[in-house]
Length: 614
Image (cartoon, helix red, strand yellow):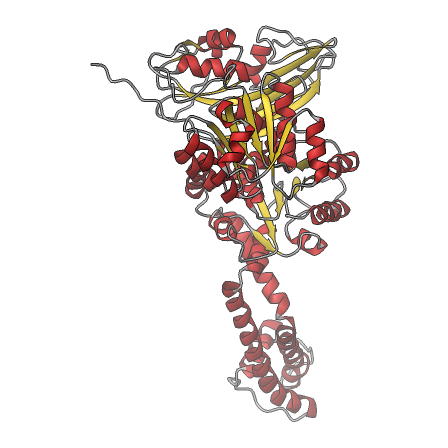
């Protein structure tokens, strides 16, 4: 009997966080030696500046004593008339130090100035010497007991880094993704007690304590040498103020900010530039909508023409995916983004010559229907436990009508017209929101979605998906439990804020049913701070992928390129090609780019940063 490799269950993007954290801890155990030396020199210079008075007074005492001995005391006791005859400054300094330490063997002078100095130098010198030792000792002790100043010294050794303002869940994930992609980061945080500060310090990331709106705090974080700044504080106004303060300090700095208000998001981009202000709902909603339509979705990309999902599939022994990768792509109309073997090593090389074998883990991009066919043809045995969209299972129930819920409904209406969509609102939902949803042609119910009677009235018996999108993790879990209790086969999509919680819920509710909004939003913010005009983004292990829309110009590096060659040679995948009023999504691999083509390319940040001109 042959050993059939069991497919490892695909996991949402959040599930790789622990692996990433361990990888970063191994990689970032110590600061580079040159950085430690330079930071210590800067920190010691700071300490000396703070103890300037006793040190300056001690120096003046020594200088005064040395000059007196050199110009007056020694020449008066020598036979030659030259004032420097047989005397040098080094000897005078040496005797002044001995005098300061009560070790001098010189004869007591007879002139009043000399007598005053012989009394004053030891007394004043000893006082200022002790004062300097006390001040320096206190400052050195404070250096170890209060690490904030040391963090500033470390930050001053960074250049071409990114500044993250706000160490909440989105900021924390953005830091990890940027570090994993090979970028250096400095964090500004108002509370040293933040739950993620200790992790940042272990990863050797400088954390500057203070308000990022303060120009001095920005200077401490190295804004003059930074290549980008991300403002992800939980306050729209503060994020705007941070970006304005940063641009006052450095007008050309690439800045990105998180915004909750969608109207403010649009207006800010008119001032700061396209794709510089990101609304969390806009970033996360496509994934929730795609997950409601298809299983095993990791993330989704919304382009005007369609909704493209990204799914992770483990190839089974009897899978129809076994064979040449290019044949699979052409047959299903999908694109292979990442190809790993059973041991986790990435398969590279020409996609046309690469073979897919059982046990391989594929990261695929495609339309929802294409990904559903791939998933169905990959299953070794049918799974009757999971329903499929049909004339019977034709309802989608969306619970929670905040910004996220409304945006998901709009996407479902655009990309799943055959489904009936039912929205469940709480009794406190404003009438204006209910009116807006009803105007879209959606049936609206008021009630508690945890109540099975409300779910049954919404059509639970005919539902393919229940998506619970409240801004409360516990409430979403309770809705999911209520739905599963009466429909064990129901497909669930849950919104949670904690990425760790999302990962743990996968074991309870199935594969890729719980998504962290911070996990979905952080990659776009991280990528946009590195490169201008980024659309959607997602992370894949050690690589950060993003989309960018470019127009092919005559004579540039894209002109005349075949889509498949562009992917194999430069790592850029054309996911949408717009030409003469028509669009191909995803673009044919055999297509050749022409001037005036508008293309949406997907690649990691290093590939996207390649200059377009030939």
